[in-house]
Figure (spheres, one colour):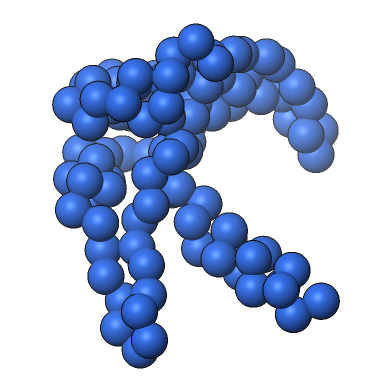
Length: 105
């Protein structure tokens, strides 16, 4: 079974976990809130790096664009740098694409 963990900068009161099947594989999905603490999020990321197959970061913006320039958020860069072994993403780029698509249509 694959383990996927979402580490959110949001409240821990919204935490959940469940198991599901996707494309014939079993997944254990868990969301853990860091209660708006970047240092707690960093500790959680380091812990789950050894226990998860993939990690998502919630309420963290990885980068943003202003005109032609692209800027990286310092807090997100710090959190991304803490992880070396497993894939980690905010899903921000996908969100940008979907937002642009929604506006065009």
